[in-house]
Image (cartoon, rainbow, N blue to C red; front, side):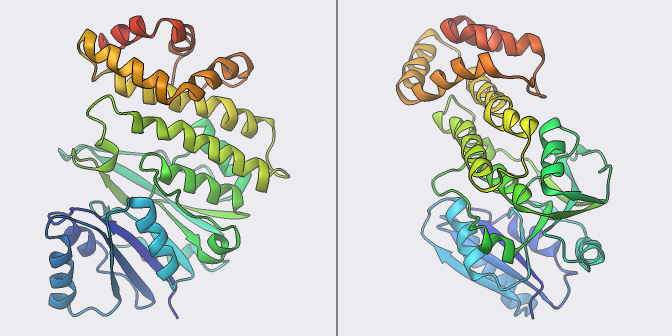
Length: 337
């Protein structure tokens, strides 16, 4: 019987995937690894085949997909997984040597999710870790509140979730979404969970690099606005499937607070790459053409929000909301830092 399935999408990671697999060497016998090659154009597939052959491992599934995006690749992994718990990691990140030992110690009572602390490596070996969890056990809605308040954080690679829960709640990664698809899945899983156990050890390292999906963004790219749309889907899921456990704090944060936070972040991450008047005009023309519904929602949300988004100061929030008629000026302000 397989207890843990580790799902790893791979796209052009020939220089990274072996290190990620090496970090999983101490996995127990009841663990499988599912590698999904998402139409890589480099030698990733060859590297993975050679790794399996060289290390004589039989617990690794090698799957091929045409390049369809990380969400479809992870969904393929869900369908192929045989484990009781699923773990999703990125093919350029690293796990601690004792990650499965730590997970095993928490899995006896069969929680819906097990979450652990992670650290972020900026690529220059400068690492930053998240604070410790205050409790060893949370209810799903209770843990959701700590995520919304900023007390706790999780990310892809820092949790295990029961496959039975995924199947029962029909949880999947949204196809065609490459920004915040992981946040959407995580919030839905948390809200669907009854019992969540925590591990206060750092078991995962998220490595930032220029070629990753999150850094698709070295320009004013409309794909960044997939983030607030993902939050809208989280809110819709919460209302439809979890209405009996969410309170005003969760509802207001998902519907307004977290939504505006991601709108601000998406807009500002575009702003810093706009340098000339022509670029500014082109961006605003595209923004108003493609994201009109977001702009209209911001106008409504700004009048109803009760809980200030945790990432931004009140001053910046007011600047962003005020600037909806003065985005040209706003872009200039943001570029000055």
